[in-house]
Structures are given as C-alpha cells and as structure tokens.
Length: 81
Image 1 (cartoon, one colour):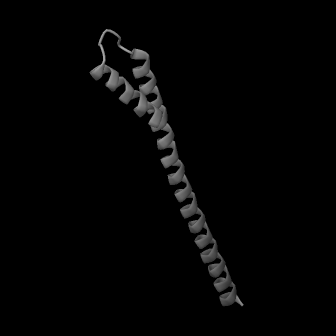
Image 2 (cartoon, helix red, strand yellow; image 1 turned 120 degrees about the vertical axis):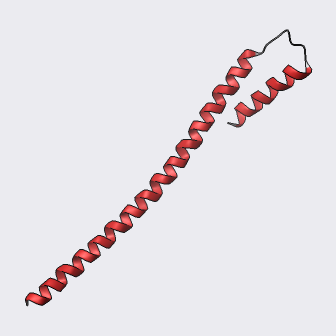
Image 3 (cartoon, rainbow, N blue to C red; image 1 turned 30 degrees about the vertical axis):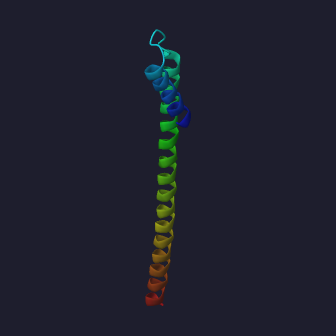
C-alpha cells in the first residue's frame, strides 16, 4: 500500500510541477495496482484476526459444554445410585 501511495504522490508531483506533455500513465496504473493489493492484504489480515477470535470463542464454548455435560452425567449417576 505504501508503494502505491508513493507512486501516486510521484505522479501528482510530475502532473503539477512538470510539463504535461507526458501522461506517465504506467506510474498511475502501478500505483493503483499496488494500492489495491495492499488493501486486499490488509483486509485479509483483519479477517484472519476475526477468524482467530471466533475460533477461541468456539473452543471456550465447547469446553464449557463438555463441563456441563460431565456435571449433569455425574449428577444423574448420583441420583440413580
């Protein structure tokens, strides 16, 4: 993402302060592609963090359910004996 921003700033600098006979379109396209790739990588990082948090919550819930089932089965055995 930083590479895309750097190329976009370079493109803006040349657009504003130099002659406008050259478009420097490849720099602009490279900036757009790099910015999009950076954004996608950032989004995937956020999703990975959310999946990790969800996995932790599910594991804790499963452990609690197992404890409750074990307590219930122990309680029912005590009543029948």
